Length: 83
Image (cartoon, rainbow, N blue to C red; front, side):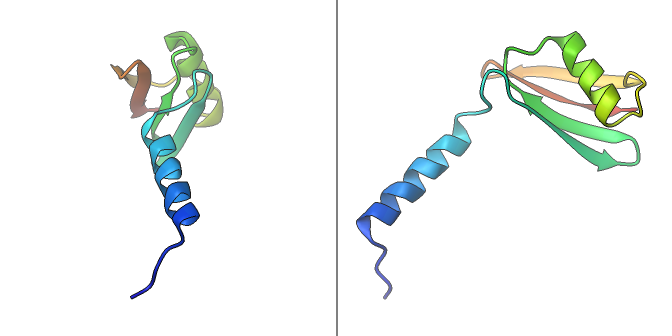
């Protein structure tokens, strides 16, 4: 049986806890899902208009998204759609 040092266990727990907390207030993550589809999440500092503009610039070749689904979960934005 392999033993994990105590500090390594603590580091793993802290890393996992950081993953669960959600994005920072000014963080933005956009995934290009292919075929004109995208998804992502953002912190609460972003406005809906800013999110649309960033997705348009980064995924849709400068045009605003044709379909943009936006939800709030735990105070953060979740979005998806198509160009």
